[in-house]
Image 1 (tube, rainbow, N blue to C red):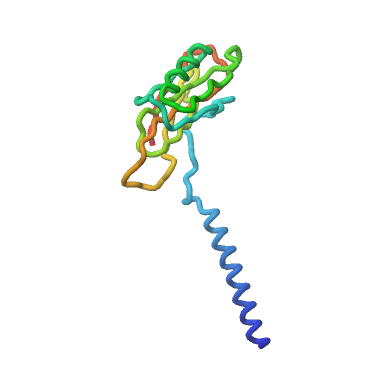
Image 2: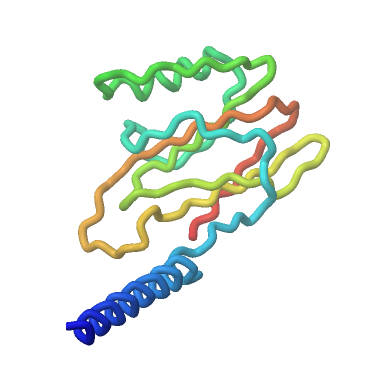
Length: 166
C-alpha cells in the first residue's frame, strides 16, 4: 500500500510540474500574438472616446472636429438609423479637438491605431493603421461599418491623414 501511495504521489507531482511548465511555455511564447507596432510615434493625449461597429456610413473617411455644431451633425447623421440613439459626448473644444475615423464597409471586425508620422509648424501627418481583430480566417465574415472617435489636445495645425492597411 505504501509503495502504491508513493507511486501515486510521484505521478501527481510529475503531472503538476508538466502542466506548470507547459503553461509557462504557452504564456511566454512570442508567436501567440504579434506585438502591435505602429509606423509612427505616439500621439500625446490621444484617447478613444467612442467606437461603434454599426453606422450608416459606407465609405472610408476621416475628419477633424473642432466645434460642437460639427459634432452634433455627425451624431445626427448616425442616429438616423440607431435605436437607441447614441448620446453626443461632452467636449471642451477650447482645449481639445476630435479625430473621427469612419472605416466604411469592412468584412470582419477591425481596429485602428493612430500614430504621428510627421509634424511641422503648420501640419501634422497622422497614420491610421487598420488591423483585423481576429486572426482566424472565416469563410463568411460579418460586415461592419465602424467608426472611431478620438479626442486629443487642441493643435492649431492642419491635420492630414494617411491610411495604412495590414
